[in-house]
Image (tube, rainbow, N blue to C red; front, side):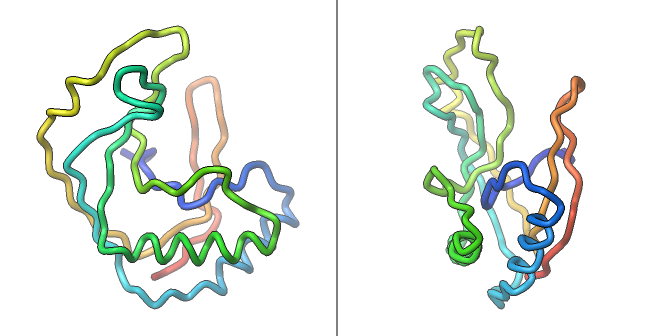
Length: 143
């Protein structure tokens, strides 16, 4: 469970000086939106469930997440960081290795109901290790 997260904007590799600039920009963001409430009732996959590479839980919220993400993207763009993909609120559940052929279309009928709340977002560092990815919090930002 400690690896589940919502990526608001993927920045990529940064130097310590660049990381400090990102921290300053994120600290200025004050959406005043309070906590975020999420629900998920379905799964999906990128590019699709017939030939999945990434399996995820679709997320729904009241619109606050899109407001926060828009503000983060606008501010980070000033530092030269832009996303090459449209933001899609989701939590990655797993990945399918490229050499595997699986069809997960039956998961579209899966019935589950997950709800949770978030009162902050984090600037994270991820490291890919032989044992898998390791995530560390660099800084927390309260909503």
